[in-house]
Amino acid sequence: MRSEKRIIKASIYTGFSEMAIGLFMAITGWHSWYHDHFHFFGVLGLGMAIYGFWHMILLKKEKGEWAWKK
Image (tube, rainbow, N blue to C red; front, side, top):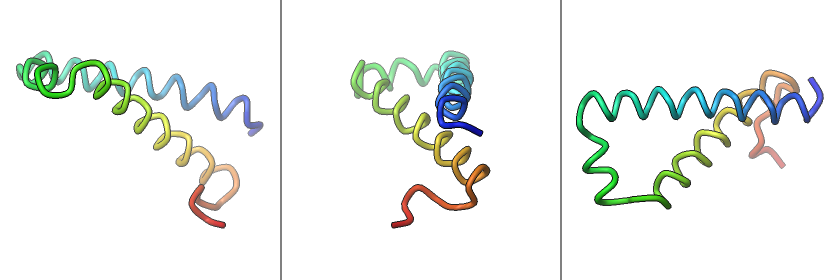
């Protein structure tokens, strides 16, 4: 897989993951607590962490090594 495809797939998977988390938060009422404590920057941080997770998984699947390897 080329890096462009990996980036696109990681972005799509991140969007789906965040929608699932958002739906779970809305159903349980946890979104109010999360918004009060973290607000916008917490959402950005969560999104970047999920994006990094998916990108590492796809890199491991493609090349057989983790991103942390030197």
